[in-house]
Amino acid sequence: MRIARVLETCLYADDLAACTDFYERVLGLEVYSQVAGRHVFFRCGDTMFLLFNPAATQQATGPVPPHGAHGQGHVAFAVRQVELPQWRDRLQHSGVAIEAEVTWPSGGQSLYLRDPAGNSVELTTPGIWKLAEPADS
Image (tube, rainbow, N blue to C red; front, side, top):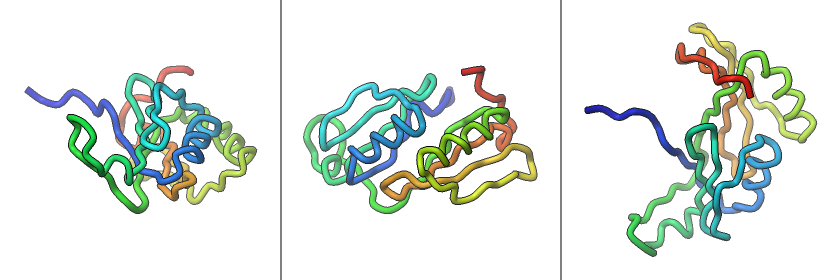
């Protein structure tokens, strides 16, 4: 028996509206569901990306144990190598600064930027982990 894959991952943000706009408009993720002031769930390929307001999720309100975090988190989204120039253009057009660009010794490249909550967002080619690139979008 072993774990098959990461099904969902999350970041925390006090201003869900600003972060929802960023992930939806700038990065193109599709909102799956949301509860105002508490959380927003996005489809991300065949997995889910979640945004939680830590002030809301640290309160016990149902069967899920309370959880939350403060400070800058990190998430990496897989992109195709051939699309990196388009991502640079899209970010520039959206007024989002690229904080760093890294070409990894093991292969692959990463663009680092910040979401409105200050979380580190990485757009990276899966070659950094020697994994296959995503299929054509």
